[in-house]
Length: 474
Length: 166
Image 1: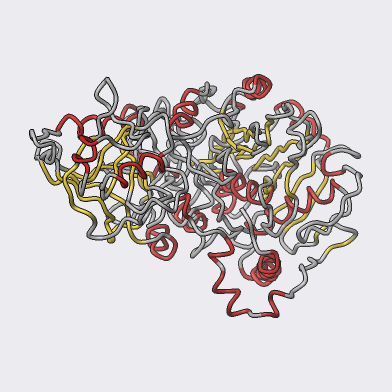
Image 2 (image 1 turned 45 degrees about the vertical axis):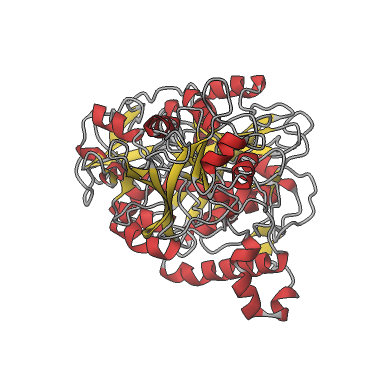
């Protein structure tokens, strides 16, 4: 997570300038309501050296500046005649030397059936205020933000305080501005208050977010489904998409073209397109891709194949000029790939050993690996292995695969260009549905996991958060 | 197509800008935003002290947040950010989230004639960070009862640093 400081500084200056320029035309005012008592949190008088464009001279000032800076980035992009009030405080939260609660942020109110609203749908309070054009909550803060004031102390994640610079030059530290941008977005509207575990609406009504969460399998949006259908949809991996026009229109400018895929051409019993996790090593997947028979490595007594050691003669004969299929476990993915490559395989499929979907990416680094590699789910891999009908020569299986990319499909979007929402199986409370899918590339601010190349931008071509907000009514 | 782990770093992503900007950019000093006495002065941001009723309310209820969060996973060996492993996916699924109540803590009519609801603590989202043996941070956000979060942190259940996806 390194950034070139001069450029980061340039971008910081540009963003500050952009905020100033945008202010007259589009800015929403954000009011940070400092809920800390004198001497603590945002008012901590401990001297601090300015860092990363943060001019604060005390710890409290630097914290407040980071909050204000993140708020200003959002404020410069949003339009609202109503001030957005954020109740904020830095307070001691649970922590040990190796683990800590960083904090939390989110909406404090939801609002429905106001003039101009889609009837019977909850809107986050800040968005409701904007659409009404007047404060509906008596001046109360509509977003709450609470972060840990002890982070970095000896008994609270020792040595790892927040990075309080404003320039994104955080290295391996926890960039408070990026975390705030993400969490503020949830408070502004990037989430549903519908329960994904039960499928039940909040107080009997869907969120406006649910109007755009569309399931390709069911052919319905969340606000049109029954509760059991929503339960199904919440774990319907890579079939839940955002149908909003603004996001779909912006996606080609943000996401790369080309979605990795494994297409089984024969036999008909398993033919079809399979979800894959791409690898961080080996050859890039290409179009039209590599079409070969799939041969299984078998080097374990139970009939599985780990390929953690150089292949014996029989396995080497089987995988030569074929796509090898091996099982996950015991050794690194790169080791498996290198071993089958050394035996003459031209590609490798790693079958997961945990029943989760969609399949995760294959991590690791080894420049010596030059063949393409993907991961498939345990269920898919089991089906493929069961379909293998090896000939006595051990050179043919009857399973023909094409390993490549679909160049017409954006990375992280469906065939129609609608960006996928995170809907893994099993359900992940706090992450599922209310984030973009992790297959998105370039990486997006509102994915459930932080990525190394995030900027502080929330707009295309770097990000899709603002287009989503436009869909919601911002 | 590259996987997440092969995503070009920020320097790579913006290298074109560097080329266009030339040496002047490389020598640019860090910007000094407008500030007064160390506090940023931003056109669209204002800072106020909480009123006594707001402070009292916050103290009574704690923060109320949405149901989403941010995670970071770092390979303990390379120190690089990486994708979530299947085990972590399964673990995240088994984190005992406080079930959303589905009911509003309070409901009231608003001046414009709408219906508003205040969310209760079951909608709280907590960002948790853990540090593995190599000192790398792992950031994870969950929706659960704040008390449960505290207990989990104290027990170190969120730590995943020992895990290596292979």
